Image (cartoon, rainbow over all chains, first blue to last red; front, side, top):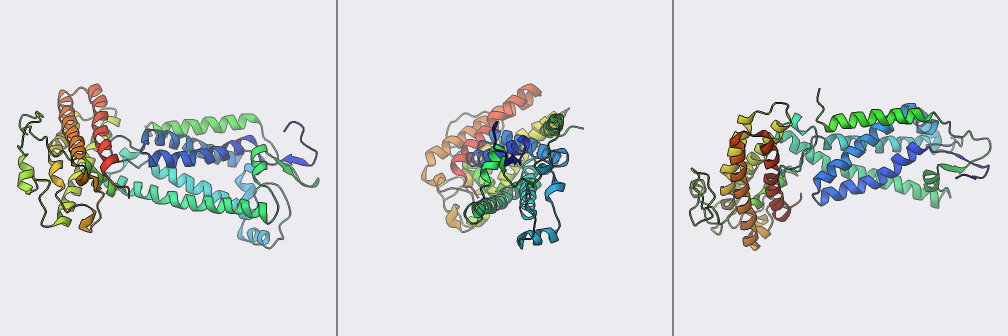
Length: 220
Length: 179
């Protein structure tokens, strides 16, 4: 990345990319540890997911330009314009992809949120907030936790389908920029606006403190 | 899936070794002496066909839920700053009381063939020796934990509940179906 050509500009910052690829790693790991009934590990994965999601939420408010929700969550008019081809070329999520990202993050948050109350029913592993709900409620929440994972899978399928569509039909590689942080763009396109590193540290600290508090059973 | 768990719990059947008399809480793996509750259910013999399979399944699920509720109750208490030892002891007693009965909860005909939703896997009947082993293991662990709980020593209780949960899990993993 050191000697990027002049026409390759910054698109995604480090926090966005790290979050993205950790999700790619952790979601299959969460599924597998659950399948194998390794619920102590499943809980650890869940805690890391919670930390990442809270971090990503905060980063969506104070992070660099392409990470921000305000940058990529647009109204239905903009989405329609994009679909019809009338949206100007710029870096970051397009109006349609932005909502896909929001849906993915939202469903992941629901998934983690449900998991906090769930139980393996072996008397060994309980979500960190399981003690706030009754046995019956925890049973129902655990079922929702399983069902919601299928929704997440469906969204991931759409996500990967869109990447394939861009690669094969629109001849635009989206994976490489998510790896390197950079992509080709016309000289007129405004690159990503960075923010100070302290913001990432602040977001990480807040996310760590929140996840730690939740996993301590949310003591007041 | 909780649902299935219950059924899975079935795995914990301690077929054989229920020699211990309920009153003294000892688990001498002696003989043929079935606990009174099991005899009353008329399901003392794991091989005996059952008149109403659906009802039998429902009953065991209800009992497994009570065990699950007791386990959760123990763990809920242990999360508190000041756990209620008496509550833990009551839950431990519940589990200790149910554990020796489990072997009687799986009469023939109460597997998937009964046509109602059950997590009881066919292995319960096809591998009775293994099922008996894990069920007997639960009886042992439940009795041990009950004794630990009776001491009121919270540190020991905290440690002691883990092998009890493990005894549930080993049976669930083997004999309880996924949803």
